[in-house]
Image 1: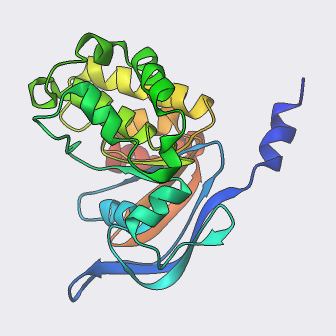
Image 2: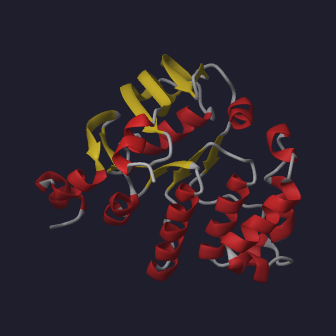
Length: 247
């Protein structure tokens, strides 16, 4: 059996962003951000409202154009590529608010998740895999997405993202609006997804839960990376515990 520490040292950065600047109109939100995501890991991004976390997710996924800086993914530059081309390379975003089509059934939503050429092969088996990963979705297979609970919709949004065969899954506030029990279930599933070989980066308001499951963490403030490091170390820092955990 290989030494886990040795295996971890062999891992490489799946995504790197250097001197990233992005915003909306004349408003600059991200200000020369350096950011990386290690392959096979869970990376958590925390910070107060307005810190630039969602803008970072949109810039990495291609939903908004970057003004300067470079993004590389899986060894190639993707900075100028639109979102659908980044999806084809393996970058999938599950946005804040889930944004499922309310009139589509669960099964139809999963089929839509496999629309890209990358995802066509094996899509039927992948749907069965999603039902195995999220048994609640199997129970609601023919239900309209709009009739699902918030937690079920979040599971559906995750499964829809996984249907695209991502190498990197970007999650924006996956526990937002969920009851604690349902949020815990979602976080457990994220570990399972990571263990299946899919790299995860999540923006999350529940700092304790995010850093508990993460391997590495970034703290953003006013469009900058204020600090970063192993998630377990961030949890012990007095400034993190005081500012975000109320301790």
